[in-house]
Length: 495
Image (tube, rainbow, N blue to C red):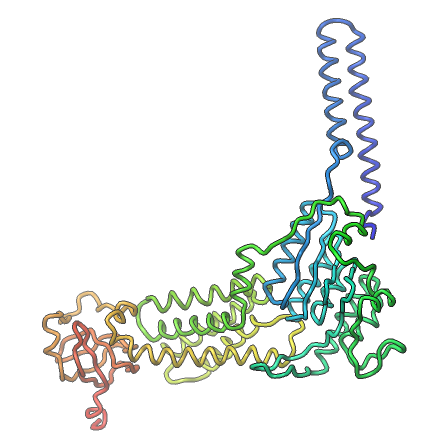
């Protein structure tokens, strides 16, 4: 495909005209000064001649310094996941900036995530660099969409392309399940639009996605289209066949090109790791666990830092693959704010708490899928978020009950200090005198706070449960400098 436009041709002609005019002017002045004969004129003539020669070389530099064309090779192998999209986008950007002659996608894949393939498809259609898809040996499912997005398609002998209907992967090795019609319809039109943009048979592309598409002599109803190399050549879906990258370069007129094989950098590898389903679910669990523990305890400590760090890594990784944006981040922030308001401002559990949970689940769930996601995939993403949230709640209950009993637990959860001027703050050497004494909680115990015992304000820690201000408490035990209290059931029953 010839990428030269009328504007490019006009610019080249204008550049040549200006070069010749500029050179003529300078050499004319140089000749005039040489003819004048005096020393100054000869010196000025040499100066003008030098400037004219330099300008000529500068304006016509490419013709004097021919360099080999550059070709970037991008491997697309194995499972197509979210981490592959930013890698391909970066290489296309680098190739465009470097003025590369072409970018060759070396494809051998059985498919993967549809949303990742759509991101790569959009990048290929929007780039100004010539793109070539070299199918060696398979471009199945999502790989077929990426292949059709390239300007030129080359297939190795014995290759296959097609079988691109979206499916919902089963759990624990279970067979893949069919998806709903609207998802198939979307992908069918996605394939058709891609084929039309590259002047390829759109009906062949649709038949790869929808088993209801019938092409007489090629595919019957109820079958998905998968083409071999020979069949793809026969039906003009691909441009030519080649069994090696060297032959692809030769038939593309780039036999002497400098080949640069692209590899993923550390950031792209980190993104691929962070967007893995297991890792992303773990980040959600740790993030929510840290926030829940931090909300339930006064001050700000290690749990809050871990929660913020985990959610930051989650959103950073998913934002780089264009799944998470400001909308999802604001939803999660609003959800956390509503939950904080529910705990600290409104008693019980009401509208604020329910809205907070909905906003939190929505923000995290929307960050797990993109364009082309099936309804079943969306449901699976929401289920992952709900499961992570349940794990975080269970983990927080365990931590709040047992963490304060561990030697390092009190250092992890920073406790609220007594107000300045408060009387009767307890001293470590006299803490045991409070054992068995009754009092009243003066601040929320989540689990730490303070209570009034025999007229003194004392730093205490609840025995893992949340205790509201004003509730009667009794000192259950003293562990070092920790005064552990529980609800005074006897006083509560009497009242």
